[in-house]
Length: 285
Ligand code: ATP
Image: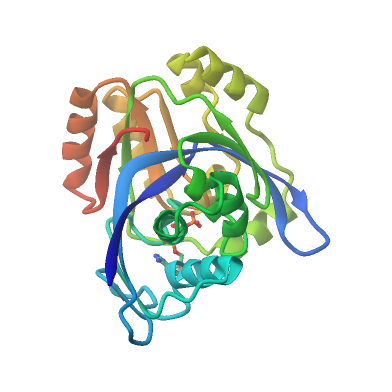
């Protein structure tokens, strides 16, 4: 039996635009995504000689074939035609659930990378990301990691240069948002403002953190904020203590800020911790 270890990194959407609903019911998106150092740890025993098992340290996450990590293992092994003779997957969860931080997708991506390494890298990272699309929309990006322009349902990826040195503060409030409900709402509305992807890409290429911050924008943010004014409170704390960009990630409910130094991040984190148990300081990875 061999034990594999892999980090599963959370993602943030620096931008997120919904371009329209497709005939197949999915939405076409455009987003600059970034992986950050908030991580789950995934361990896989390969060759246990027993039926597959999965355990997870967070209650409420399915610990069976419904788990995205399990699905990823199945999709990968089917694709390369290998039988591992038993798998035991263990997930140490730190990425909050239903946060818009792609927790499940990150775990699935970690399984793809770990198994691919175990079998001698038969698939390139891009082929692995493509396979990830069968597991979930955010899995391709979570497989690639770094900074990328993501389009379609999440399957079209273009890597961008890494962000300049900075810190993220991420706060997950107690409430959760229903993603299907949010898409239904956005389909019914005119989107009043959209992110400027060209400007964001130029800012990233120039390594200009000020301009990157100016261009952070998520079309879901005002819709969720309208119903949960609490997000404005969190953003006001971010803003009062040195952040110039604060925005919700994905379909929420986590919000993040970019700050230039650890000192600012630590002050914001201490302020928010008084009311919110789930606050993280992270770096881009
Ligand atoms: P996204 O940004 O991709 O929408 P999210 O933060 O909104 O992610 P997740 O925390 O990834 O959502 O999980 C969404 C649902 O997926 C959970 O309610 C959970 O039941 C299911 N799920 C399946 N596998 C996992 C996993 N390994 N970790 C977390 N959730 C998982």
